[in-house]
Length: 382
Ligand SMILES: Cc1ncc(COP(=O)(O)O)c(C=O)c1O
Image 1 (tube, rainbow, N blue to C red):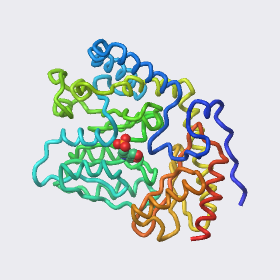
Image 2 (spheres, rainbow, N blue to C red):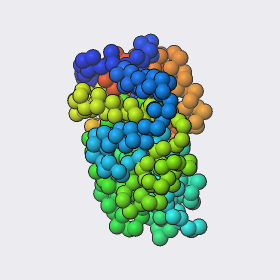
Image 3 (cartoon, rainbow, N blue to C red):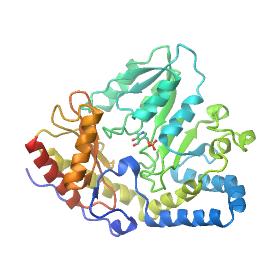
Image 4 (tube, rainbow, N blue to C red):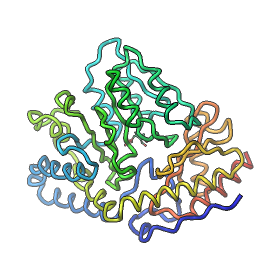
């Protein structure tokens, strides 16, 4: 087997972040990272708020509308059709609270869904969970498995655009259209989509949400919820708002005295991505993740899951009986961090879990090489 070719570093990529140099941050997909110009923009906003709180807070609703319009333009969304929310978990709850549900109604999810998002659905209705074999490569087989689980009680389907542990696209435009045809309300968890895919709202679901703080370079606590026109009148504000009479999106966004600096600085992250060349960044990140996955695939017992090569995340199954539970996965994650200084996601799964790695412009091929060496010796000793 020939050794994979390491991609060239992204010029200036590392200097854009203040990440600790001792650690290989190979887990951008979990919490993101904030580039220096975005952090600076946020600090400027905070300084404004400290200087004249009255002027700052009184202007917040209108400034949010301006920031929202900039974000909407980047995402290809309707400017009045999205609202800032804190994160994907909150967005899921707000979206699901907008559904009119009867006692018998069920929400369809998959076993690749994100824990807190699935729990938001479980607060609202009984769940039907579709088990999808992580090795199922065929997109059409995934579509058929989801559709086969739809019954007359299925009121809504909550599906990942790109799943967290397995890094796979599930809510394809075709699946969303098939569900809509069956009268199922579609709710798409696009937590990873802003910044990682070019047209995140293309499938036109009823509800869609995405984190700006992952691949959109925004400060943590920045996400958006997009709602199709037919549902906007039913979206509840998370807390009573002085903007209640103006409805969605203002009533959802304006939550009294709070820290709005992350949302107001969020467009700077998307602007930065555009100025670096979003396609160029995506191409670089996916090839880095692919390089890392190729190195890990060479380790005995590690099996790559089917990958969408355009994405900046890759998942591999670990040898059987490792990371079967959350506690085992967390212990392995911390061991990798402590011994080899590499931050990765270890996901638990029945029978044995997996590892997910990401590529970002601050990463270097040597970091994946270090991970592969470390994990190789750890597994050999196990
Ligand atoms: C697919 C998916 N959904 C939801 C979330 C939750 O995001 P947040 O912590 O911003 O609520 C994540 C986080 O990694 C995710 O990967």
